[in-house]
Amino acid sequence: MATSEPNETTEVLDAIGSAELSSDLEPAPVRTGGPSLAWRRNLGIAFQYAWLLVLALVILTPLLLTVRQALSPPFRWVNEGAPWHPANIAWKDRTFWSGGAASLVGRLIVVTFLFAWIQKAYSGVSTRRWLSEHRSAAALGVGGGLLATALLSTPVFGSFHAADGRTLGLFALAVAVVAVIEGAALWLVGRRPVGAALAGIATAVTVVGITLVAYGPVVWTQSWAANDLGGGMYRSFVMAVLITVAQVLTSILAAYAFVYLEFPLKRLIFAVFMATLLLPLEVTLAANITTIQRMDWFNSYQGLVLPFAANAIGIFLIHQGFRGLPKDLRDAARLDGYGHLGFLFRVAVPLTRPVIAAFTVISALQAWNQYLWPRSVINDPTFATLQLQLRAVATADPSTANVAVAAALVAAVPVLILLIAFQRQIVRGLTAGAVK
Image 1 (cartoon, one colour):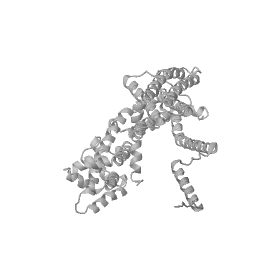
Image 2 (spheres, rainbow, N blue to C red; image 1 turned 30 degrees about the vertical axis):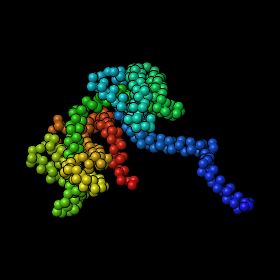
Image 3 (spheres, helix red, strand yellow; image 1 turned 180 degrees about the vertical axis):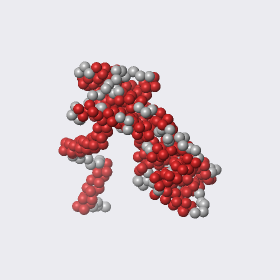
Image 4 (cartoon, rainbow, N blue to C red; image 1 turned 120 degrees about the vertical axis):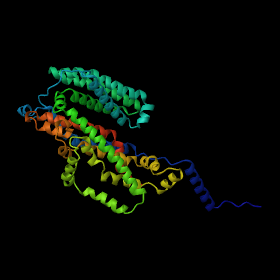
């Protein structure tokens, strides 16, 4: 039998098949774009960082101007021509290790927290990974930075107090040493040398600058001693904690009842709850003051706390969080033997934790900044809260107005710590449900 010669069509089909097979086995090379594409990408990253830096300066400038106002006595500052920098700062004769045991422990905790927070943020990894996989870098960045700051800030404190003209050089030396340590720690984590060096310089300037400004000037001690600021901060702290715990607990229970329980007129009652948001505090102020007076709760924590034990905003936020949970979870929990409280605290609350955490921060900030209600039910200066003490400091003496500004900055420190500690929960709570 004669074999047929392959015609032209068969040869073309074989060629196409072999080409497809080779393309499957050997992927085509990816074009990177060469130096032009890399240059544009780096330029875009640089522009983004520059824009973020400009925005940070815009946000921080009012704070820096407030710090300058706190450090400068007003009349002396005006006599020097109202310069952009602080004028006639009174510096303490101290070292980093001066002060009582409580002050020293607080100082060490603050500086350690600053180094750890900045190092972890620059490293770009999670806290667990940073502590487990980069222990040497964490120890160098936090421990070495703390030791260098403590040792090198001491001569800077002395130079500030003596005004011997060596302050700028000593400050530059402290920043340089701390920058080398922090840059080396970031390099060990895996950052590029240039990025690690820039991050180390930024960290050194920030932490050393905060250490000197926060513990060197006399005005901070004056503001703390003025009108019992420490006692007012303690009373405000107790009031804020009690109000926050009460509002979170009542909001969780009420939100659960509105979502998972059935009772008559549920929608109407929920609408009445939400309608209370339309009533400002001033509308009910007189009636609430009369009630507190009849119950003899003036100058007491129950008078400060109980009128704010429930919050309609918290009920609404947590109500929306519970509504987002699948209904099947309640049925599964019932089959597992969980009652309402078991399902609430074992399933519903853990799943809506970001929303609850966000409301906790909101509630704490509102309680901490209260002025009108404490002003209405407190007439004993020994029981005044922080905001009332700040008002007394502000109206004391115009020549020491910077002490009032310094006291306000000291009062803002707990708020700043709260925001830093719960920043992740705040973001998760505010963006919960935004992405499906």
